[in-house]
Amino acid sequence: MKLRIGYELHYLFEHPTPAILMLNVHSSRVEDLVLPDHVATIPPVLLSGYHDGHGNWCTRLVAPAGAFTLRGDAIIRDSGLPDPAGTRSWQVPVEDLPDDTLVFLLPSRFCDSDRMLDLAWQLFGTAQPGRARVQAVCDFVHRHIAFGYAHASVGRNATQAYEERRGVCRDYAHLAIAFCRALNIPARYCTGYLSDIGTPLPHPPGDFAAWMEVYLGGEWQMFDPRNNRPMIGRVLMARGRDAADVAMTTTFGPNTLTGFRVWTDPVEGGA
Image (cartoon, rainbow, N blue to C red):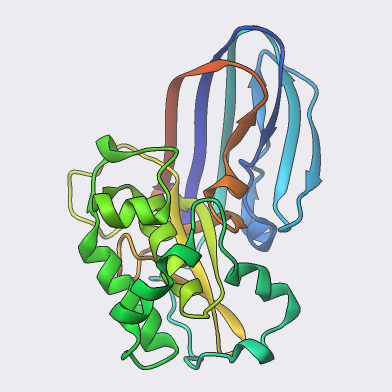
């Protein structure tokens, strides 16, 4: 199948402001693009790009004072199948982990796993190590947090999400990641597009989604504690330690987000 993916973000800037964007499809999915996901701006400005330390594609620009719009609109091929389940289920001992996975065992700004160490082992210490333990984490987080867009908070960390028992998809991911790291399982934060295909109506307004990848059996495997079931039409944009690493826009000056729209829609007839 084919998906139309894109966004439109409207800002109001007080004065010319540098910004970093992370709005492109991840390099692992670039070959699936039928129409490219170029970043367009209104008014036009000079853009430059680079790969960050996690391999994500970032765009730099200076937004002018006044109204400013970011827009992307692309077509991407997708299998049309639900998320695949990993086939390797065992937990790799810490001493055998590859060097580049170790950073995803450490606490980070929103995944304060050091503060959740005792709680994690109390809740999941008896679960079978490996995929079964990760799934136990996802099951718990899925039940524990009440989803609601009104509950969104840019400053909530995993401990606060656990205590407040409410949030959005990033809070589900942060809490599950913090638990996994406390259990010596590398876990990283992912963001991207996720369609509503196969979910009951009415569908909520479009938004970017968050999930996690954990290192099991020598490979990174996807888990989605928010939905906690295989979904259709998931398109990765960026990975990092937590949401602070993969913000869709990072601005270096005062501004107001005045409009926000995201779409992940099947293309009728696959045309």
